[in-house]
Each structure stands twice: as structure tokens, then as C-alpha cells.
Image (tube, rainbow, N blue to C red; front, top):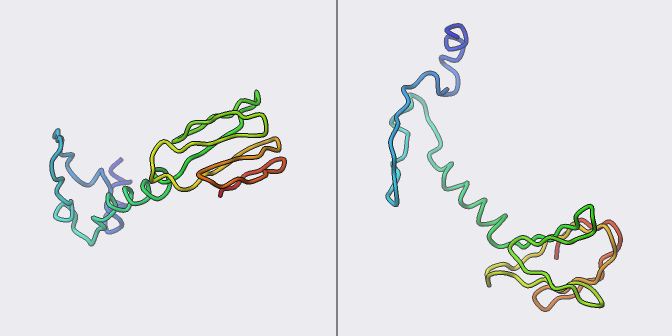
Length: 124
């Protein structure tokens, strides 16, 4: 283990090089960790993760056709209609729908309707 630690010195920060600080936090500001490091670090990583979650999950609905033919919805409710599928977003900020369907369907989402061909993986 010491050989590995010695090889890491001078490279990117590694957890084995620093003492673990154990503490419990609740709803409060979390201090940045730049002062723990001896080189330039990116404190914005946490902010970038929240930004990514906001852009990829919180504004999107997903429907997936399972192997048994049932359709599962995430961030949305699904109504099976005689002529297709109606997808209803759970919240008003959900403006995009991503589909992974194996059979042709007509999908309705937020006032838009799209005829989906076989083996469709995409969004609208």
C-alpha cells in the first residue's frame, strides 16, 4: 500500500493521502474543500452534479417498454388508450419525453402527438 501512496504523491489528490473527516450535516451550508488540498481543485463539482440532475432528470419524463410488453413511466403517468399512449408529466417543469419502445405506438405528450415506429429510442 505504501508503494501505491508514494506513486500518487505529486499527482491528483487521492483519498489515502488525507485524513478522513467524519461528521454529520443536515440542512446547512457545506463548506468547500479547497483548503484540504495542496493543489488546485474544482469545488464546483457539487454544483455541476445538481445542474446535471436538473437538466437530465427533473425536466424529463421517460417511458420504457419492458420485455413483457408493459410500459413503465418515470416522472410521468401513463394512460393506455385504444389508439396509443397518453403520457402525463408529474410536474409542470417536465417538458421533454424520452421513449424506448419496441412496438409502434401513437404517443401523446403535453399537447404533442407523434406516431412512433418499431424499435424507437428517442425523444420529443
